[in-house]
Image (cartoon, rainbow, N blue to C red; front, side):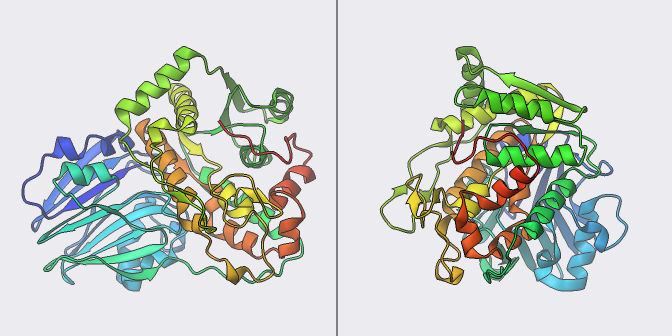
Length: 442
């Protein structure tokens, strides 16, 4: 969980713009001034060698936040980020299309007089941009751009590659990172299950820091726990007591591999107060934007600080960081893609778009608002802002490119047969204790 900042403004208050984004990268801050641009990179070192950014050649500078899981496809690199400049030179501005990872990237080509910025498919790593007359800025958080004096700030959309002209700043979209197929042809869950276990495996491979999850009695965290057990991967698991089925949690703890540590968190007044105080002081204020394609629900005034889910996540991250964990495997995305917060046409939450009833022709609804935006965007930013404030990197196996594609490919009748049918099949095949047919959260 690093953070990045770039601007051509000549005068900066680095402390002001770096206040919140620095927490995402507590291991090292590097400031580079080159040809009228200021680059700031805050490093959280997780995988590979300790690697200071930005990366440079004679005419190209790039820096990024996240992990590139397929970097070895492009060469033998000491750290995954070293693949970015060679890949840009080989494939041009649309090079993020070749990447399998979770990332936000800034690449400056001084010879071409352009800046290229990109999110990953779901914008799991935040990126914001502002253009103000002759000046522009790009940063991991909105607050960094406001701290640099920019007023009108926009979030870079998911699945988007953009270009900024250095000589006459603008910001235009030039491509997509991924195009999904919406053909529904698979008659079983085997390919999805294989993709999911591979997604978990790649997110823990060669990781020198301890991994953790927030473990509930529901589907999403249960599937991640099950995959980690089957991979014999060491990890920590934290369960916030309250709404959870304790019998299910006990069964899950009993099923854990021998290198797993589990802790219960009791959300008493002291624990909640500490978690809330951290959010109030260490996380910039941001507002969710959740809405429904059915047009009867819009919510734009709920702040992250007022969401009980943020408090629960803060409690988990506080405990995990104290235990030395730096990598969080999140269940974000499962609800948005596999259930739409509904089932059989019935909306379980008001921002559901089609009640979880997948049509025979998926193209008629794809992409639904929360596939890339709405609650997907809002809750990803919750995960990123809260985990990032503890210097923890969040990773998202349910938003892996192949995991999503294999789910989309499942026949609509199988999708609709049971609530979260693909996940349920995985959990049932392995007899993993689960509170089925309910949605449980903090």
